[in-house]
Length: 627
Image (cartoon, rainbow, N blue to C red; front, side, top):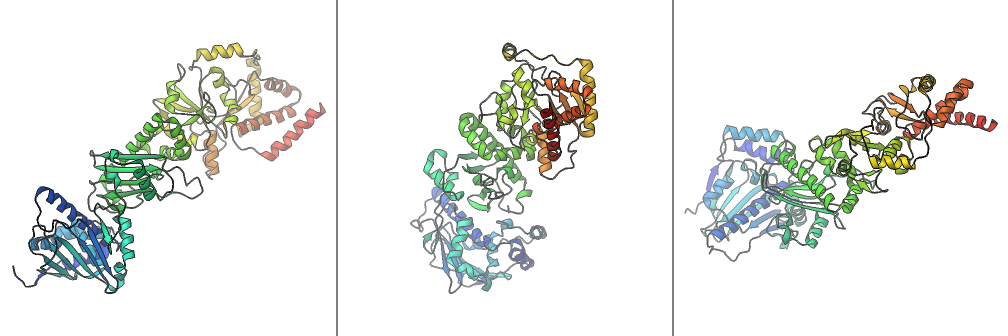
């Protein structure tokens, strides 16, 4: 072993390569601390594995840890680990990666990566070289676990490095960084503590800054579920979710195939978006081997799951992953698909196991499931299982699933029926549910403006078409509930005789003439029982509630007010009187026809000309008072 300092030149392209690494490849200076701490943790893990395989006699008493010292007067940052260490040859090999990787292909790849302006982790073995973003001189002192004497590698990143003996070292590696003038803040322990807590909180070895352990929270997601107490789960949620209460749900998921995944996710008790706090940012952090890759990741889960808090860790992610390149990485796409399917399955299982608790979840976060159905085509069918609505067969506030509805459908029924309204009371007093009640056919109540939009996107469920009850082509003739029919027949009062065919058809034609282009057609109804009239949608896609939603959002160009039919009840006493009145007092009959039309529009939730309606009402009242 020579006692002389040996100077080596990087290959010809290295100056260019280092310039790329320092000035283009990394866009956040803090990254270099994360890189060096990650390398130190790897060295400790290698030593731990080595000590299990072989007996260690050199420095066996030294604890496995990372120590960081900050000298803010001399502007020096020192990072020391007690890991596997490096021999002279390993120093040259491991830290001279750029020196022996100077092929044109390497340079082309590195230059291409720099164009994308990415924060790479260990890309092409250059993770260590991120230190030169902040360092004007770096000295790496290392002694291997074998006990042979240590050496020092030193470079200013300008094209050469030196290797020299360094006797008297302990096992492991010490990196001494002389900081550039504009990077002297990295000699502050407060800066280093902040970076460790952001990126390296869950490194599985103690990280001490000026003797104080900084990473005090365990990466409990990597432990077996039966080893973790409820208290530990809840404390971790409070840490990762910045919360003060306990979560509503907890999802701890581990898988080896098709990808190695460790996930610990939580559902909060509150939906902060509905509390007026604006759109939530994603709450799940992405880790690779316990090192933060992407905080509040927008790529690891679909946007509709932004209400979740927690962590996802995958050892299968390549070390060159970055925030900017996450969305283009096929492994991340596969990881997102696996996680999304498993989360949907989890919610389905929770709904089956504890319906009351799931209903609490639904009332708080159901809006996100609805958002998913309109935006996540790949998982739409599975998401349909999670939907909940009130139903004509249940009590107020009692929710049912589409599965429950389908399982108790009437004989011959081939559709899932629903009707939208501002409240349950409004729906049940309206004309659209009359025939459903009479026949005993269940109908879902969609009480939110977005519900019809969601169900239209879903289209069908378990091969049953989803049909709004305000459609003109609605057919209940195939749905047979014998007990309900018999009961209704026994309890019903004698039915009014409807107008004869030769009377109802001219009346429909006359009403159409009065209303003009306001309606597409006026027809006798086969499903009205008590109400005299109702508005139905000829366009099966555009329900009245969807029309209201689009109009409220300023989208008036969707044929608003078009393709509406008016159905009239031939057995209604009012319709019979209207048929007679149009012969004796056409003007007053026209006022009544317009009023029925406006009433039907209001029951459909559609806008009316309120001022004209008021004037007409006064005319009708004056006539009634005069009689």
